[in-house]
Image 1 (tube, rainbow, N blue to C red):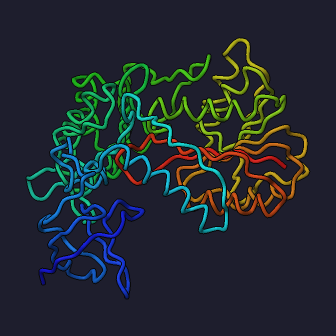
Image 2: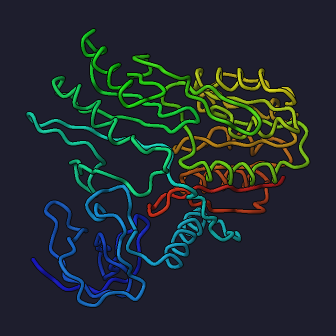
Image 3: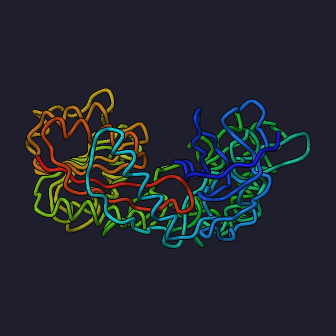
Length: 411
C-alpha cells in the first residue's frame, strides 16, 4: 500500500527513520526532513520501499556510483559530506550513551585515503549465467558490478581477476567468496567455497593467475599459484602475508590508528599488543618499546614473529599464540606492562576487558570496528577503575555505517 511519510532522522544503518506512536519505520535511501512516497515490503512490517521523493532534503547529493541504492556496500552516498561526518560521529556518541558513558568524542578523522585495499567479491552461477559482485542492499541476491569507486587504485584488476576465476569454477556450481588484497608485491587472492579442486581445474586457475598477473592465488589458504610472495611494509618491517590475512580496510586507516596508539603509549617501555594479527601496532611500537604480542591466529603470529626477527633496530617482540577469548591474560600477567593495546574482532574483548579491569595497567588503548561491543568493553574497564580520556572515530569505511574507534583509558 502506497503511503506518504516525513522522515524524522537517519538511523544507525543509514536508513531514513520515521518515529511514530508505535515501532519505528525504516526507509532505505531517505534522508531526515524529506517527504517521501513509500510502499510496504512483504514480510517486513517495519520497512518501506522508497518510491518517490516529494520534498528532498537540502543535504541530499547525487551519488557518484551507478550501483548505489542497489548494491549493499555503501549506505549514504546520497548525504552531503558535513552532515555525513556529523552522523557518523553521532553513531559513536549514541553507542557510548547506551552503556551509560558520557565522554568527549573527537571529530571524525577521514582515513579513506586512496580507498579500500581489500574486498570480498561474491560469485554465483545460475545455470550458465554468472554474476560477480557484492550483496544487494537488504536482500539475498547479488548485484553484478563492473567497477567499485571506493576501492583503491592498487586493487585495479581485482574485479577482472575475480570474474576470470569465477568463470573457471562455474561448472562446480558452488557459491564463491573471492577475497582480494592489494599488497606491495601485487594482488593476493584467496577463493573460498569452490569445493575440492581437480588437477585440471587447478591448472586452469594457475593459468588465470598468470594471465591476471596475481602475486598469489590460494583456495582456502592452499597454494594454487604464486609469482611473488605477497608482502606489506609496516613501519620499518616487511611482513610476508599469510593467505587471506586481515588488514585494516585502508592503508590510511592503519596509519591513522597506529598514530593514535603510539601517541597513547608514548611513555611506555613495555607494551602488550593483544589480538595483534600480523603486527600493525606491534611492529611500530617495537621501534621504542619492548612488546608482547598475542593472537589466536598461528599464521599471523608466525608472520609477525618473522618480520620482527628480520628487522634491524627493533626492541624485543615476544609473540604468543593464544586464544584471548577463552584464555585472556590475567591480572598477574598484565600488571608488568606499562600499557596494553587491544584490537579484537567484531565480537569485542569481553573476557580480556574483565581481566584488564582487575589489573594495575596504567594505560589501556582499545581499538574496534564495532561501536557496540567497544562500548560494552569500555564500560567494564570504567567500572573497574579506569578513566576514559579520549575517544576518536576514524572513518576508513567511507559511505558505510561502519566506523573504527580508538579509545584511551588511564587507571
